[in-house]
Image: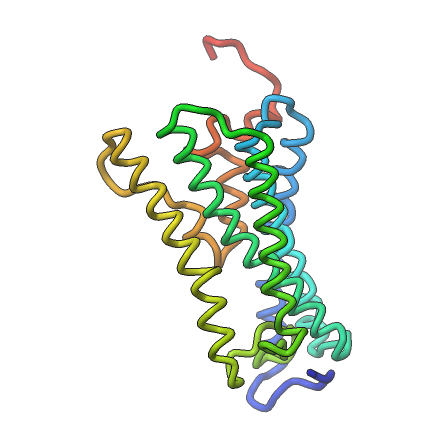
Length: 247
């Protein structure tokens, strides 16, 4: 298990400070925009639909990633990891679970869009709730495995945050995890949008904004808060005063 330690050789304080500032900006932007999405779901009855529940779940997952980045930013600005070995394990678990939930939520949204456009039937509440529960329970399960000995959480090279350790001999875990949490969601997402494209007779590339944005959760927040093809009415617009039909 990882222990608190100073910065590794080869990293200057200016470099760590720069990383901390970048993480801080991303974390605050992600939290602000995803909070707007969550607030919109709670404030506007029109958005309280099964399909938008999947978007809410994605916003919560990306908020978790932003919170994880905020902790990393704080320790980077302190130029050390102040939370001890237990904090390292908790930080790794929380960040990994949120990241997996974000990826799987994107696949769920893609499937939900396919269900809506290609079957011409509304997504049922029990289906949406079951999907959300499955995504979060599955993500927590895979994120807990390194705590149980299959996989390992350790410091990143900079030494100011913790994540899954890819340098150890846990190839069986990495390949299994990658198949179920990366390749399978990717297949579901691409297949769903490809089938939608064929069904609706559209040309060009299918819309896959969410999965591409996995390394930048703030992009997800912008996409869903300011309006997207999957959210028929931009969430930002729902926070504004209603306009007339002519406007």
